[in-house]
Image (cartoon, rainbow, N blue to C red; front, side, top):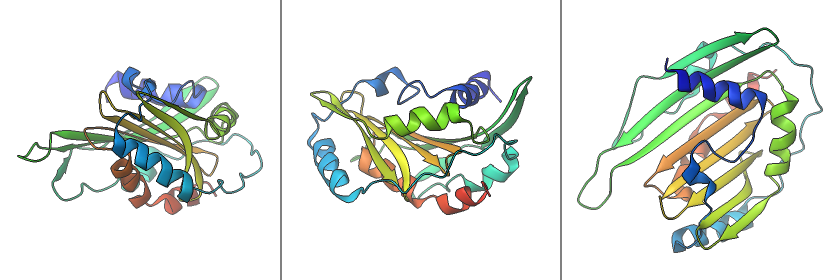
Length: 209
């Protein structure tokens, strides 16, 4: 596995310092009418996240083999690269991460597009949960895009859209433990949210028990 995949896992486990891994994702953007419409519909449909579980003691993360089957299958018209996974051990910390990469070829009516899906398990690290809860309550809009808290399958989530790059990102904190991150280019945020909502998030949450 490439070094940057491990770096993502370590960064997610130690702290959640921003809304996305790409510089473009940090530039909000509701200038696009699709994004603006999406903002209003999401605000109306996304209720308050379900009550978060009480803080739990740090535990060993699940092995990456448990997370790989939860990566989404490629939808019609998309292809999936071979999934990647690893479990990394540090002197005082362990983290598991899996990564899926998806591509859609350009057609006469649609541009080439890509989606990446990452899942990491830091074993109930408060370094992830506490800042994420604050992020999930934030909302920011500008001429270039937006960043806002939403819910996905009852779990707190954070969505970013950048109109200039047509980059969307959604991060979901599942069961106070698993960080699910989806990132896309050339599909809008509503379509990326459909990817997230189509995943078996209940099965992921069950792994926390």
